[in-house]
Length: 439
Image (cartoon, rainbow, N blue to C red; front, side, top):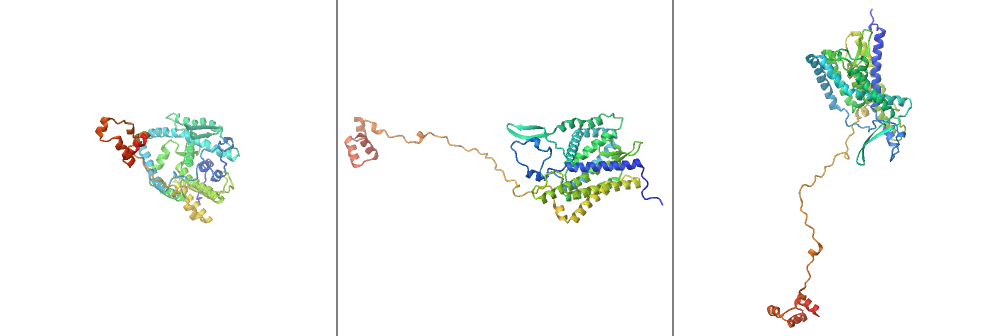
């Protein structure tokens, strides 16, 4: 009776193990790179008017635990549709304009983003390695951007970044300088593909396990359809010579084992979410008492369950592919494995309701609601012209200075005797005042 699993040649077994190990290492490194500094560290950090950069561990992503820009359920629903449109578009372009032109256009596009992704990969892995070895990377340089006397933001970086920056140009230059009539070097394709996957895992985040389950379920159908239902995905993966896949030598004849970057990034986002949830659980249970200030030192039950499920799912994919001698949609096995790892872990720990309700998107409260902004007054209001003090003061009566003459006396029909009589009898106020001055 023939064995169920045919014997595996040693070089092919090495290829399978190497590809699985490479994908797992990228996911682990990307998941830890996506972690933020624990809020416990922020609570117990002493405020300084002038921070001493030599006393602070370098990190370029000290943000809050909440991510308002994380992928939400609505985005996860549209993801398979968008992916299908892009995949079919590439397949159509290959058939209509030729694979050479498509390869050239995509190589130029990937080269534009390659330098930044490789630099992100180098700095992220160096930070993980130095942390594991107990080496502190204190920032030695700081570039401050100001507007007048107000500081806008500052960029801090250690010495090692100055050495890693020139190294990040090498893979991209070697890739784009390859002659057109020659295939791209496998080494640089793998390096750029690993950098793109690492960068995506450290930047793209899911907001909840609900979103992750929707995403994995949708891409489960997507992968099965485009692999088993059509030849579109296989044609695109084998004909395009661009860094959208991981490759490992299969034999000495130039054959390779392939794994698409989507089979690394999509499950990797779910695994990175599990790691962030483990950190959240630790912070909540610590209650801000500062039991640990380490960035990575906390229990990781959900993370280790998810990474174990990924290894098991990818190994199952490899075994089925080896038996059937046919390409397999990896998400057919990876999606159920990752989802089951979360459900089983949460059920065993009795945390299903809490884990399912958890989200990294901050819920708005009454304090976060924007208050209406007062509109500026657009009407022109006429302001009265200011007057001096003397303008409003009545002028003094100077009629008593006038000397009556005969003409005036005759004309007015009064005399001094009459005025005096009026003053004695009371008379008019004007006459009384004039008589008083004359006395």
